[in-house]
Amino acid sequence: MRERWETTAEVIAALRQFEAAIPGWQAPTAYGVGYQGKDGEPKFARIDRGDHPLPGVVLATVCGHRAGSASYLLDTADLLRAIDLLTPAEACTAYEHPNLMAWRELYGQLNPNDTVIAVFINDQGGSSEDPHVKAMHSHLLADG
Image (cartoon, rainbow, N blue to C red; front, side, top):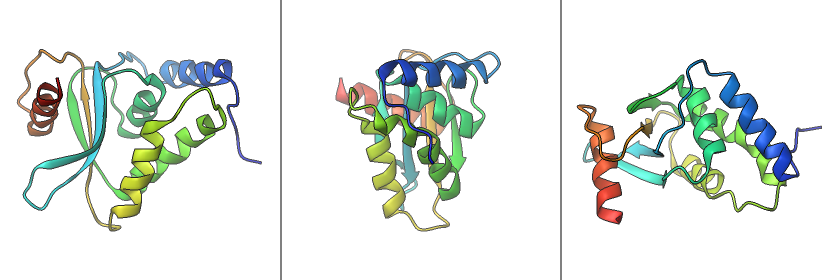
């Protein structure tokens, strides 16, 4: 039987377990998942401004992210792993699970060799030389 987190307490307990498993974990101010567009620009399937911490730490688990602003190039198998790690939270109907829905939709649109981009920002006002972090900053500023 597959694991299910049916209550908010179980979701919060899972969040705390994921956080504890990452030494030096610092929750991002924002994080996003997308893909590399044909024009070379990242196309974000979902950007979260920190309202949903569990998907952020799940994504960080897959990427190996600990803190700060950074981007990671992943493959479709990595995205599927993030989806699988987050799926037990779906049993809790107190949440809408927009990240999980967006990740699944993105996964369904990708080819097996496509590149997935995961971006973490620790301070929306900060600067970075990472082009994917810059792109997400711009997207956040455009959305207000």
